[in-house]
Amino acid sequence: MSDYHTQIKTAVHSVEKLLGIKGHDVAEIGIILGSGLGDLSDHVEVNERIAYNALPGFSKSSAPGHNGDLIFGSYGKKRVIVASGRLHPYEGWSAKDVVQPVYLMASLGVKLLIITNASGGLNSEYQPGDVMLIADHINLTGMNPLVGPNDDKVGSRFPDMSRAYSPELRQTITHIGQSNNIEIHQGIYVGVLGPSLETSAERRYLRSIGADAVGMSTVLEVIAANHCGMDVIGLSAISNAATGGPNQQPDTIEDVWANAAISGAKISKLIGLLLAQS
Image 1 (cartoon, one colour):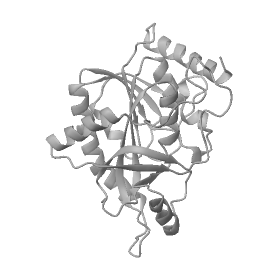
Image 2: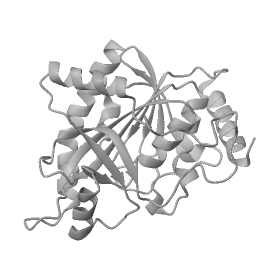
Image 3: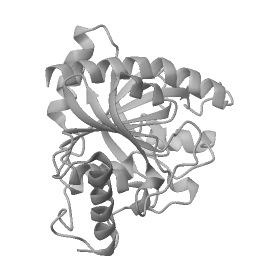
Image 4: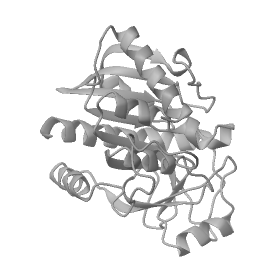
């Protein structure tokens, strides 16, 4: 076992001690909340809340809108672990730091990871406040959490990523949206390093290579989730128009939060309906 996964195992033991449990069947579903989407945690019946930095080797996010807590509880009838906030590479964290919560969740029994983010709409058909179901992603961060020694007990040295986001669950989410009058786009998410937002030329380039939305998270966590055999659903809150066209307007963090909240209400409803029927 690598030093990294030994550290994850130590954190798992700490969680077991803090929760007063023994065994790796704490929850079946993990949820990672993106920028401005922390209100989704209001729908969780909380049993315990643990700060990231209360666990050995874990760190607390410094990004705005990210609490940096792990919430253990129930969402409807499902046992969940919610990562309220995440680490980002632009804060100075390594790829392995960023994905620690994913491996922790896997070690505690999570089989399905629902990952959310706030992103810019590269596709001109997307409007702020919309929701995009991630069909696939492009990793342009220049980082990968699997670089370095591999622990074969955790996952393959060369995990397949051709179905990184579960096609079956994407179909289920699409049907839920149609049945409940929630418009959902389905598209390609591109992950970049940040923290500066993209230039207009970069946005046009990203659109030209097939991306529909752009953000500074998600791709590393999805790689880790696939590495350890999880099913993944990705939902993007379109928080700003990022077409890079002649009418491109400057972005403000206030507008991003406001639009993420509009999308977040839709995402929260979709997640609730999904968990109610799964």
